[in-house]
Length: 428
Image (cartoon, rainbow, N blue to C red; front, side):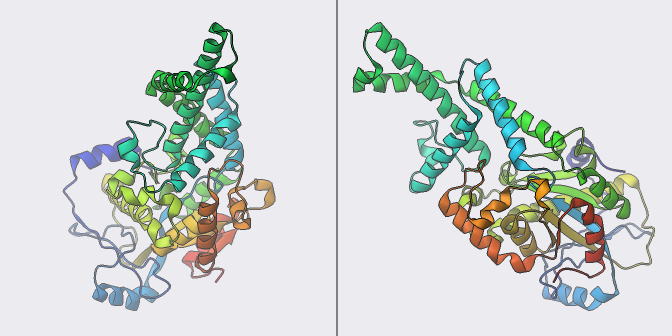
């Protein structure tokens, strides 16, 4: 039985009080900080399902956990996935989303803007942000609406949409003025051009910018469903069959959300955490603003801690809804966490730092992964990453090489690999 996001939200709002759960996360003192703990229920006469986790609270807990780890049977409690280039190829998805962007622009009268224009504009904006790190972006937002308040993908894309709209209006206005004055656009004076620029800036309405972005984001999710790797669904279903109590979540640094992929991934996922949407939950905006400058895996830890927290909450709610007794109440279980992703830096490095077993999705060429081009020092055509960011990303990837617990070339291998990890086998 899976729990819908609506049910979870309702139960969370009611603040379930009984039975209470003593949730404790502990890091094993061996094995590089892997999962090795349990959650006990205070329900009289029953021993509830216990979810293992991370982040020890005391040295004594760690020593106790380490001493008993060999006696526990490992089971999969939490499985998290990256999405882009892990469950579907990101390149064709963004191509089709950008085509939808171009169509939406035309529908609002901004004709002739090509899908590639949004990428080029985004790259330019990101470079400008990187070169102007001393500027208080938030303070200047009212004066210059093109300046994003953060450097996340969504803010940059919104700024790029507005920029292309303003450029279109500016060129249209300058041509009209030149025609009225029977002269060439190049002969217009600086004051006239400056006035036209100001007029163009005030003409673009934020609601139109948002509408175009919404069209882009909607098509992004539709395209992701169309391009899902052929063995993605079957692999996840097999894992669910092998591990009936597993909580499955998505961890992403972009705008993808499996809960919006209603015809494919939504029934299979319990939650999602996003670098863009969930930063407010940790109240550390400066970490989010520094995403492009992250050069150490531990700087990514907050999003994985949030994923583990959501996994714990989902597990507790699921058990309470089921009113289910532990079928193996005499068995001492170690509930484990596995993270699956294609990015050495963010997926492997970030998740391993927080205690996850990691599976690197290094697929065969026919799958069409393009994000890994960054390991070769190349920026994918769809990426807005700057050269400095590419260098930092490559360095982080190199540092994460020894944190890979297993790697797969096809998603159909994932159920077997997870079973091997739970049995203590890995690539190491």
